[in-house]
Amino acid sequence: MDDATRGVGEVASKYDNNPATDRKARGSHVGFRKKNKTIPAKTPEQLDAMQAAGEIVGRALQAVRNAAKPGMTTLDLDAIAEETIRSAGAIPTFKGYEGFPGSICSSVNDMIVHGIPSANVVLREGDLVSVDCGATYQGWVGDSAWTFGIGEISEEARKLNDATEWVLSEGIKAMVPGNRLTDVSWALEEATRKAEQKFGVDLYIVDGYGGHGIGQTMHEDPYLANEGKPGRGPLIQEGSVLAIEPMLALGTEYSVVLDDNWGVVTEDGSWASHWEHTVAATASGPRILTPRL
Image 1 (tube, rainbow, N blue to C red):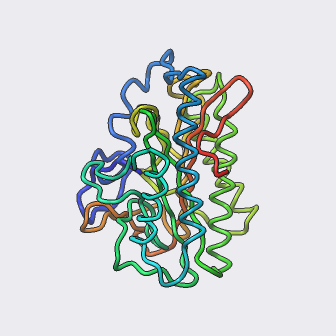
Image 2 (tube, rainbow, N blue to C red):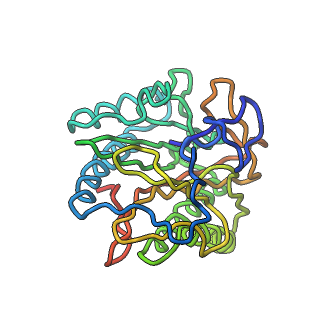
Image 3 (cartoon, rainbow, N blue to C red):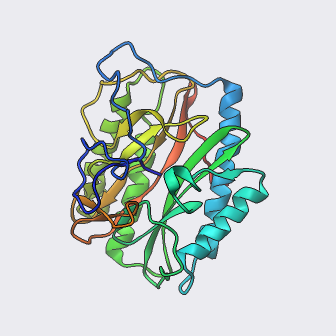
């Protein structure tokens, strides 16, 4: 779930400081010029605790995807996720966060992120649905997003979604000790350009949204842009953790916040895809803390 503060109806900018623009980015640029700054490290025991929370998120996402079908509402999906999370002894991290009413963000077709689950949003054959979910378990947070189709989706939507999933996997590869924050940003940007050729689709990196640090709270410094020059920002060390989450659209990088001050849609109505994992840097390589087992 993102951090945003743009006024309702305004076009997004990566330089906004409005809680509706990118709820994951508040205060994230502080200390960015300090070359010796590092992303805080978690101990191996803390990483295990984070993965316990992340596995609950993974199970919730699996349950939602397995149940989703035409005729269901996004509020139905929310109830499934909340039941899965609470039955595991965890708390839905999103519910009540800055007043957000749901346990998931459910964003359909041209909605990029932050969709409020609703009985009025009925899923149809061919829809593309992004579900972003968080769980807090024994004081640690897991955060992950998965975009999937309802029944048969168009070839263009499939290419978009497959490309976004691939971009995430490529970005994760840069989450290793010794890299800097924007090495991950650059890996995501470079992968997006390569994905256009690989999947045969034009892609736009949604402006103003990105990943974030995470641990005992959902949104921690630093903000992780989904594009940018490499070699900048705080150092990734063994035990550093980031939520990495590319958001790509078919027609534009620009977005607008709806009147509910949460849902974010593409400015031109083109469809979008959002994939996310919570990832730790370890001596043996990137460790996904939100596996979908």
